[in-house]
Length: 329
Image (tube, rainbow, N blue to C red; front, side, top):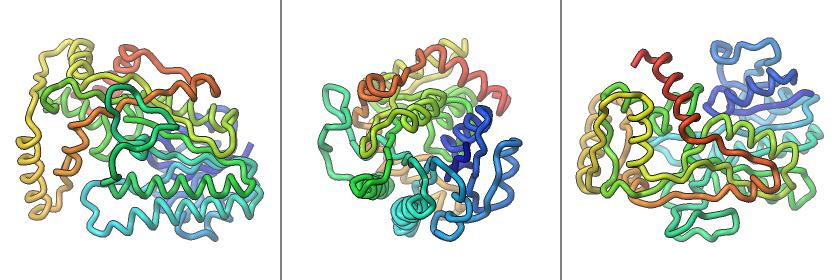
């Protein structure tokens, strides 16, 4: 089967592209640069130079494809022009869906984020929960607008679903500093990590293999116009890093810091960014994210799709092994 993937050089998209190619599918990957071939080397993956902001290039790449996985998105902390998020994550999504409509694609899938659903209080949130707070993140807002485009096309008769991964970790090409992998790698290398005080704030950590499998299941079984949370283990920062420390058999230090202290560190990173151009690992706004619970329920995906969550210890062992071999930490 011919399948188009946007964002095939990204963390989820790259893992997904190789999985689909290994299954014998003909994967069309739309990429902005020919250099992408370095991380997309597979006999069943064909690269198409283009951009989701250029619908004509999408039409060429989609020709003959029966399915579309739209994983491409603009992410980042210090992007000076927030319209970049809107252009890529909203208008780019509109272009993908319109091209899918015009080329007769049978089913489309949009990769969103649990950030759209927001923070939780006492129990994990599901797809039906109303957001408790205003969306402060431009990225989350743009993904919410992207979801609305998918639902609009689904209401008009297209077969399209949305998946919402939580905080992802695990083997693969995760290059930016926002991923859990980057924090885990730093923890293993520097033997120290900072977490919000108290360390009881919980996050839903999802293993990359589960996320990829969830995409496949949603494409196969997902109902058009529906959204499925693809989550993992809801666990506190303290227990998560304690588990990493136990598995890696080392003496990494877990230090709890107050919000004001972390915001002070974020301010220093921002100054460094303005002087050197080195992007900060976190900002004052992202610190606010840390001091909330982000727990989610994957029950809908489990019941309707057959989604399964890998035990935390098994997933972390694979992740630590990969990161140590990757960076020699």
